[in-house]
Structure formats: C-alpha cells, structure tokens
Image 1 (cartoon, rainbow, N blue to C red):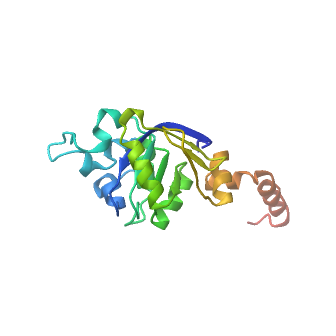
Image 2 (spheres, helix red, strand yellow):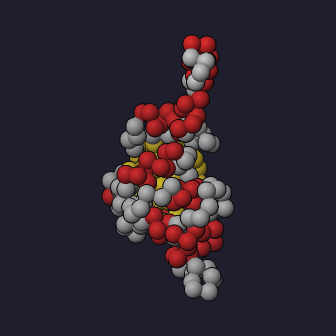
Length: 201
C-alpha cells in the first residue's frame, strides 16, 4: 500500500449527503476482484447519462476537477452495503483523501485499509472547505497527516483527529498484510518449531 504523508492537490466539492456505496460503484461493476480499472466506473450514474456520455454538470467531469485528489463531501458518506470496491474505485479515480462531517463505519475502515485518508471535521469546517473547493483549479488544499492539519488555498489551517494506530499504518503504507509481515521473523520461527515438534502436521 502506498504511504500517505502529505497530499497537495485540487479539492472537488461534492456536498451531497448519504452518498452510498451503490452510487460510488454500482453493482454491475462488482464482478472483478482487481483493484485497478474501477476508476472509470466510479460515481457511474452521476458521471454518465444513459448513452454513456459524461454529464457536464457533475463536478468530477468538469475540467477544473478532472485531476482532483481530495473530495469534500456531505454527511454519512459511504453508507449502504459493505463493498470494498467503493474505496478501490475512488482510489483508482485518483482521490486519496475524503473530508466529510461523517462516514459510514465500514466504508471508513475500508478507506484506511486501501491507502485513503478519510477525515471527519465539523460542518462549519466543511462549509469553509466547500467554499475553497468552489475555486476550481485554484482549490489547492494540503493535507499533512503527520501534523494532522489541513491547509486551504488562502493559507488558513485546521486540525483533525485520527486514531494513532490508523495514522501509523497510513504513514508507513501498512495494510492488514503489511502489518502481519512486520512479524515475519517470528512467524517463520514459530513454523519451524512446529515443523520439528509436530512433523505430522
């Protein structure tokens, strides 16, 4: 998993509440177990019309936000079914940080396991960030995970809370497998002892 230290990029405003995982990645795209290639299907029904043409009014289709790395979202982001394809699609779209007043628990946890930083801040901060993000390609926001700080285009700073263990994992690029592999020597030693003491296993 790619490390997350400091992210500087365009922030796209998506002030919708209750964006569920079916809106993020519709069920017809869940047939793959590959994490790559899902970005083109992210927010599919919001991004494309029935003929497959991009909807010009959807924020991520607008030229200023095509390369957005940060999403400023509404409350209860990621609700609905517990599909891990949702963070896969968002990450493949190029977004590494989502800032919202609240998240659905399973989606929130899945973000950390896939290298996305979900940040919870109060609605007044969201309103300010949405205003910042409305500046289009000038909506450059910096997220410093080590300092737990968000810096807006005007230089204003706000801090955010994060669980220390989750912060450690993101800073070091550790998913569940990476955490386990930190104990590779101990695992190898255990397996060798068991092979000697219980060779029938």
